[in-house]
Length: 183
Image (cartoon, rainbow, N blue to C red; front, side, top):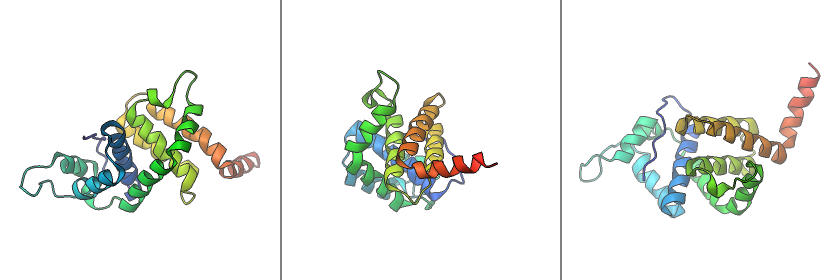
């Protein structure tokens, strides 16, 4: 199963890892691919610059990875795997938190699969990756959503992640509010 983001060269290793993680979470959701299998698939087929398989046939997943920049060898593979493992480990906490932020009458199961994957990755980072500032997490997943969508989906990502960031990391937002009041 291949989901192709818009190609954008010059992306950071972690940005590429987030894009790949969203693709992998989508694949796990839609095809039921197991966690370790999808990690192995990305490691061996999509994070490689070799566009041919062992028999010399063109590998469309590798070609797609090359077009998106993932095959350049700069994808942070450990960060990619950490996101996937974290989302799977915390999914029982992540999904209800997202559900609470969606518009009345909407449930996460009704949301587009790639949008669902983006939200799950972002919420995982807000919960567990304190080394990444909340505003960076929000911005990164808005950009990931822009890679896959032309509509309002990036605004949904912004709204949901912003509200959850303020809940999970209020100290990061309190500092900027205090600084802004003093200007």
